[in-house]
Image (cartoon, rainbow, N blue to C red; front, side, top):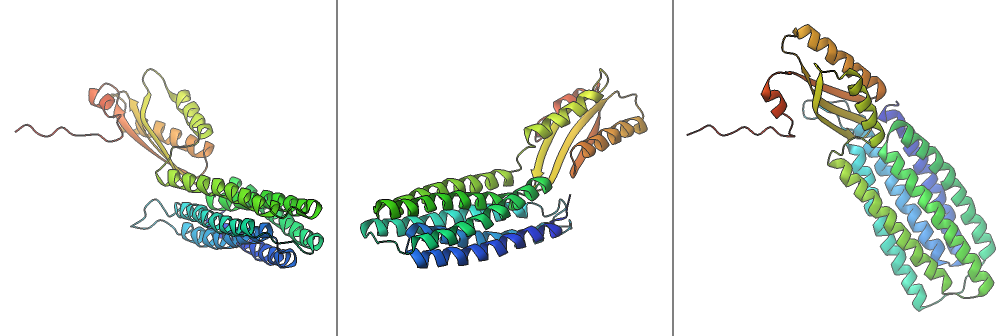
Length: 307
């Protein structure tokens, strides 16, 4: 897995793409006067802000653990994806406002053909950058890059809708079709923004591992489980690219410390190999002690002493 510092090159790619598409779409808007193309340019402006935020948060993520952040800073990526979701919602409001104004006062489009060519080229740039960022985000488990990629892909499909609308206006002459498509674009952007904010918020609440990773963990524990070896209090969480798991290993009380330690080391090693970049914590308990079986809740609540 690449370090967050090396992932910054993908954020720089996103920044460069955003700058290029903003310029191209702004030119297309000036040529045509299409509010749909204006909405497209505004969303690309959000892409630029989001890419800069992703770059900043990836830099924070790269910081090593310290006394105040013993588990590292990898959750910083969630702030980037959450902020991007909010910015998308702000852009949707701006697009909707511009579309409503144009609905009330329709405006004829100009130089449609040349404007479409320029905007199409911008969309191709977005698509290529999105595919690169999406592959990197999934490969390196970076939610910041993945969110940036998803936003760029949304921009691509949004642009496709706008291009169809502008072309339809030039054929039919119905000027209100342009702002209507822009309103539909705004609705689609709202859906994407809400999804990103929700995903980031859930992740900040220490969400458990994804089902495929959970299944890998279960298969490893089942391989070691025997009548004299049991597991419980299994807790997983993820923070950016990092994975954390803690569990209790119940073994016979007659075992030596070395036996219990060797078993725990094997289990931890197998989990780390199967789920890269995971931190594993095991706690050995005597199988015969009733207190071991009572210690399964997320928080062990001590009874207050009798007065």
